[in-house]
Image 1: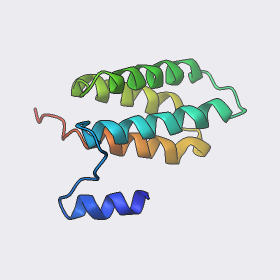
Image 2: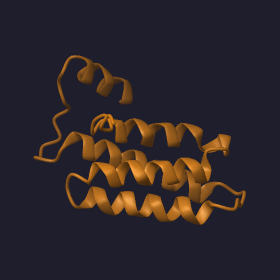
Image 3: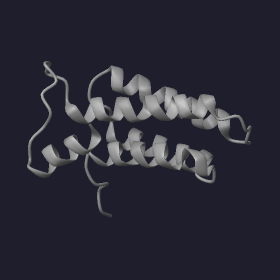
Image 4: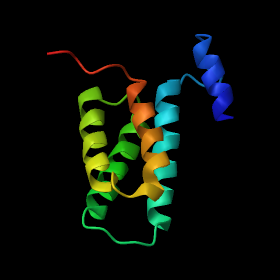
Length: 110
């Protein structure tokens, strides 16, 4: 199904979800949920695991309240990437979360 979303997005269309929910929020929620499950199932302990779990929980809470604050999204993404960036088994899930955050727009240029 993910490939279908990419095709719709490339055509400038959005999937119909039957609600007024922002599709970016739905995609972020899905990516965060998937990474949380992968992290919970990952057997190895690593020093910053609690940070990753906390930030993923914060992202999940943000998606429950509508469109999240973009600076907070990016901050959480950086903390998660720093916490689990070296765990190769979680790389795909982290990439999906990064992609979902990027749907909210580019960071402001300085």
